[in-house]
Length: 81
Image (cartoon, rainbow, N blue to C red; front, side, top):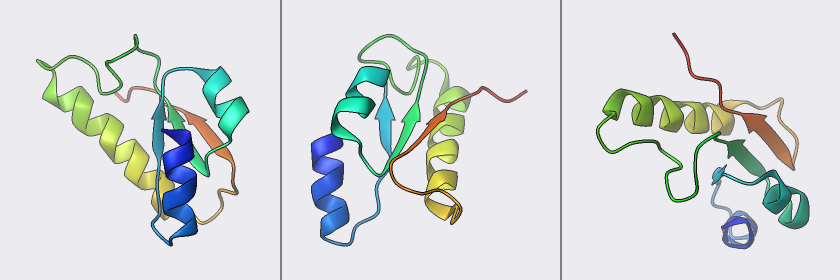
């Protein structure tokens, strides 16, 4: 995912990679990554929890709007509420 993000960014398309492994971010260094503390294959959480999924996506979109972030930016998702 990180390599795809790099290529999309080079083409002018902003990205945020949802990451499950810190090591992947350190190796590839995508421009913006949101680390989500979940098991592999479930970056958005359980299919039965739409509120959590929406919150993860909102956190990712907030990274796109944050002009203070410099690449490579890695933020840890913290559940709200």
